[in-house]
Image (tube, rainbow, N blue to C red; front, side, top):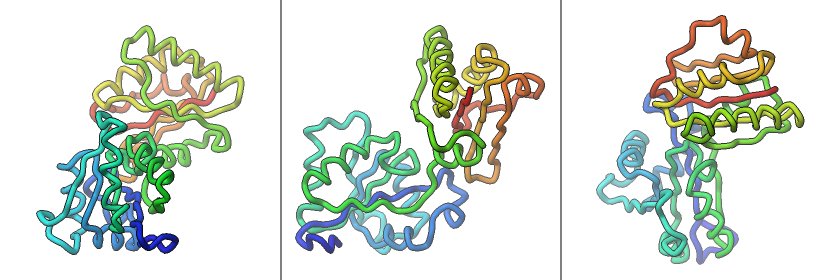
Length: 241
């Protein structure tokens, strides 16, 4: 409910777990309680959204819930239709494949439009792999940049790594980035082959899960370690030169 404007609903930004086995660990009961009561959700992927909603045991059966799609292919002109239930006074939950909606996520566009329409946007507490990785890295948490994905092509990727290393050194700024899971190992190898020996690298994998792995060392120290197998494992990379 939107207390400031009872005629409009509230857009709840609902974080999801970073894996299927950590519901109780990752989400406060109050967050689960809000999500359980909603009937309408805007989701990035319907299959994983239904799995999450089934796990939290929504008040209504899954077949009676309304799931509206929002992903990277959704055009700007499609966004107003997603706000229609909110403008009619119904609360809506926004869910993401990224863990926290609106961060490295197309849900940010819907939240921005909701603000312009006078709709209350309510973020709920939950795990953000980006912030969890930064917290655990020991790197500069006062100045940092999240870059998203680096270039796919190797030469461009290596050039980008050198650029962000220079920026990090100049500004004493943590650089945070991710990769498609099946290319994680190649990215790790490129970092170790091309970054300065004293540059600090943190690899944070499977955050908040039972097989969580976080290693934070200088590049020269990484080269003396057996490299972890990051293939197809959700991983966040952090650099501090």
